[in-house]
Length: 185
Image 1: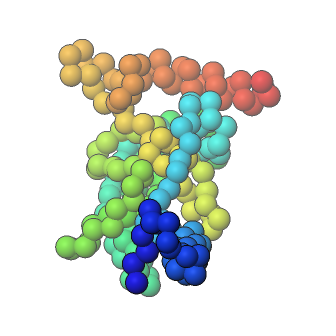
Image 2: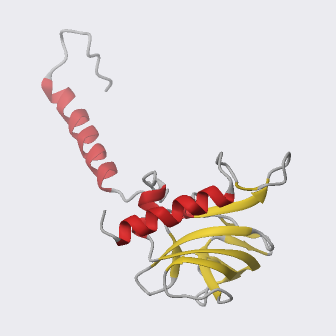
């Protein structure tokens, strides 16, 4: 029987079952895991990126391909980077780093990692890297830890894409940040 809440003749025994049902439904929804799997990432500045990374390098992407994991439950993209400069960390120039990241495309199946970086073979990059719980290299702050070095369309000067700074000025500032953090400032 419908309850008219504007009428003065309704009784509490009509209202309480509906209120109880709504309360139970709200409680169940609040306990349900987030099925969308949303990720919140804090905005990191350059000092944060340096502080949170054990390895900071400049390099060139030499390969990008996607494949299923061994359980065939996730698509992963494998990226190889030829190291050109090491700003901090225990690798050498000419070393090759391999990154394995969630997401990619295999045949007609696409798995997207929202917020994760993308790479192209031949791309020049500066990477801020950490390690996950299993020891694999990860990009600090998702796409925030990957900077593309490109030629400015007007001047031809090498610049950091999406920033108003030349590659050389950025690297100079980066070296200063790393030195300051190593000195404990």
